[in-house]
Amino acid sequence: MAETTTGTGLPKGFRSAEQGWPELHRIPHPPHRLPLLGDVLGADRRTPLQDSLRLAPELGPIFRRKAFGKEFVFVWGADLAADMADESRFAKHVGLGIANLRPVVKDGLFTAYNHERNWQLAHDVLAPGFSREAMAGYHPMMLAVADRLMEHWDRELAAGRWVDVPGDMTKLTLETIARTGFGHDFGSFERARPHPFVTAMIGTLTYAQRLNAVPAPFLLRRAARRNDADIAYLNRTVDDLVRARTADGPGDGDLLDRMLETAHPETGERLSPENVRRQVITFLVAGHETTSGALSFALHYLSRHPDVAARARAEVDSVWGDTAVPGYDQVARLRYVRRILDEALRLWPTAPAFAREAREDTVLGGLHPMRRGAWALVLTAMLHRDPEVWGADPERFDPDRFDPKAVRTRPAHTFKPFGTGARACIGRQFALHEATLVLGLLLRRYEFRLDPAYRLRVTERLTLMPEGLRLRLERRRSAAGALPGSDALEPSSETRCPVHRAAD
Ligand code: HEM
Image 1 (cartoon, rainbow, N blue to C red):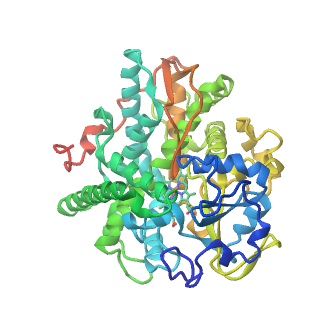
Image 2 (tube, helix red, strand yellow; image 1 turned 45 degrees about the horizontal axis):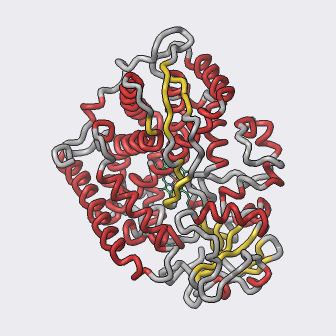
């Protein structure tokens, strides 16, 4: 694995794309490049990803952009992206936005450099927390949180109000990871404003993204102070949570129990208290922000495509019948609902890019020499629109692209919303189970009415979210005429952690 020795993740001596890519001049960049400033004309620092999506078709499958002396290489052509998925020659690169999160979570699972020992240790200790058996254990808790969302939506519906889709999906996914991972309850559905943990988390993600778009960090002095306060709040919240667990004794075998109690099966090593704190923040953040976006985009498309929604409802009715509370195995059987989710993640992979670095000197796609440590961003959102793979109309929403027959005809490594290789998403099955379950429950209970004036606007803060998306609901009767019951679900109040109840 490429040994990284500088804060940028590059081996000592590499400072810029020019040094890592000996034939950089052959890689196209946008027209009208300005001396010193770079490719800033027409760029919007709030939407770097969407700017890249606009530039990509004219610049081609590999291109570069420069801002304030920093040059980045972007790859999105299917052949080149597949080459970068070759684990024997490439590895995850911790750079840009992810490196900017290092002050928050240092060697936590998501931000660890490949050579840091704690990555392997935490990966081995925590991976069983995502096994099929563990997932089946989380299922009733996921149902209980979904039930709270539906109670909230029933109230909004009765009051004739629009529902705030990204806001409510964020409440749902935060409560789900907090409950399943840490036995904690942030009380999101009982509060009018987002939990301060969410505000602090969004603050740190936004700051990490803004750092990439300024010539020097000192220009964000005030924002940096706010960021320090946000980090301190995240740390305090997590320390309280861990303290409460240590005082009360083990939970029900959740992620926190694993972090505190499990020794590495071979070395017997355990995570240090510092590292536990970093992992808890990592999982609370990584475990909800992206899933919330995925659910929000899926609901957007469902409201725009009543034919797709009707087909999905028919599937839910047929697979779940009048079962009030769907079992764990009944979720994976919602194959069409899952395709809707995949198609939403194709168009808007909520983690829209990931970075890969060369383990040794190599030639990307047989054309572009790279020195060891040189890196590029795989632009997932554009890879998912490559016309060579997805056809002439890649913007069209069509869940049948994920019909098993259609999937088999596509080359490998063309659908990568969860990243690739050893550092791909550990929470993939968790996210897919949660999101399919919730979409199934919502489709069964409601009809979604769109706001005709709404045009999709996508906010970027390292992850993507449909900004301002709201829906009006109508209550639907299930096939058997009964409404999905909630009595059988776990009572949410008993799961509440005493920490923060008063302070929030
Ligand atoms: C739709 C939802 C999700 C998407 C689109 C997503 C996407 C990703 C991507 C692209 C990566 C790789 C990043 C890179 O290469 O730099 C990643 C890594 C990661 N994800 Fe997710 N994720 C999702 C849900 C989750 C959930 C639910 C959890 C936890 C419960 C989670 C935890 C993590 C962690 C810890 C890593 C780092 C893994 C490592 O480096 O070993 N993610 N995710």
